[in-house]
Image (cartoon, rainbow, N blue to C red; front, top):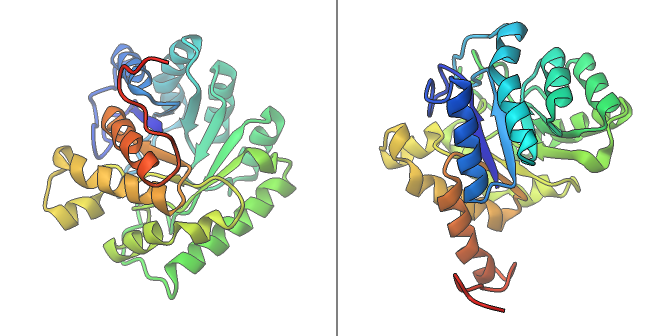
Length: 268
């Protein structure tokens, strides 16, 4: 489970709550204690219509947070599409670059290759400002898979270690409700690329469209999406509600035959 730490004033779910570095650090520690194996720290919102943030501002938001959480021993992912921000974050202790533009900037590929870090390649149609402007596909799963396959080859050709690359179909990034549902149901086709699949469906607008719930009341829908995604082939779930997701998977995994059930507090 990858816990989300948004150090932003305008993220769709928790914008402004963790803009203060101390608040973000405390939140990251809570997520780690709740069972997050990775903390995904971002300083620029990628919600639909989000405004761009300059690299100096993005760095100033995230670096103190990454340094403190990495010093705790947490495994840190940096959510950025800027090579200069990624380089600074890696120097501060991050181990993974989560790039919503899938290393389309050759400079970002060079930074990741040199650092030999982990990389998440995500599919997005357009940019955060334009991605929800009537997104259309002839075959959403096939097109997303083909894009990720091409970016996987491009990253490897640029020197990024293929064994450290994960792929993300980009739930909510240039997709309709139907597109998102089809992608989650068909994650096995994305997993066929041979790399771990990351899914970030937590609190997304498609859940609100289905349930009628505002963003702060989408836990039930988010848990349903997370469990189905895990069953369908996701290896990593990027979520806001770490404790609830970890509990859901603790029950779902033995049902799916992926783990032995363990009673809380059970002895050896």
